[in-house]
Length: 113
Image (cartoon, rainbow, N blue to C red):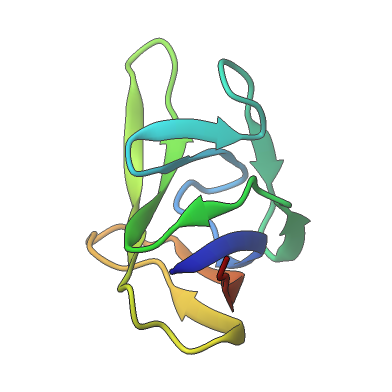
């Protein structure tokens, strides 16, 4: 079985003009910046540490932008299969027509008993 851990996200371009208020899910469970509430303000460029819990593969990381009080916008997702290559990898969040561009750095490891 393989597991994954999100290491960081890199902002190439925000969706909003100034700051995106980021939060993230794995398979529908919110985990970053914490499990229930809060966001991280992303400016035009920069790296943001994630240091997620360890999750089983396959799965989906979803990045959102808080637009309170109106809800949130999708900034895309990264789908990972059960046969992802081991080691540190990167993938762009995809799936929206927004202007935001973010890259996820994650680490995959095989575990056995």
